Image 1 (cartoon, rainbow, N blue to C red):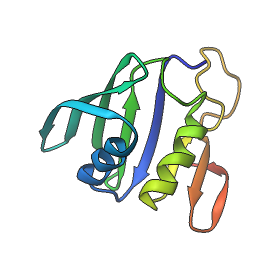
Image 2 (image 1 turned 180 degrees about the vertical axis):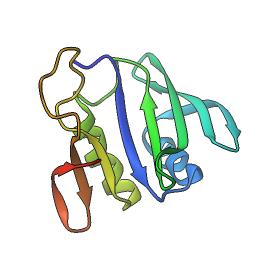
Image 3 (image 1 turned 90 degrees about the horizontal axis):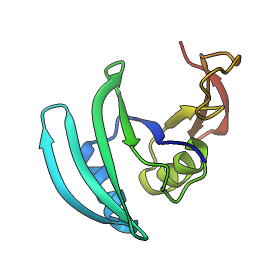
Length: 123
């Protein structure tokens, strides 16, 4: 189990991301600003803080960070797949998940888009 989940969404408005979350979760406490939004979602009995940060990676990628180990996904890739199905926007996430002392290439990511999914070097 990961301590948190984070994905990166290409060229997708914050409003669309919030609408995706509203499909599967009870969303509350939405506070938007010019760089994204902070909100909470409820999954089972867990209340999960979510931060949506526009332009988190370059000008076109938005970070969606679920600050909890109690999400419905076991890893970032599972979340990325669900997000891609709902948003139809390219999604990227860390390929190896969260590991403090990982020796894997930090530029190796998992990418899902209309051409399929697989490993991707993101520099």
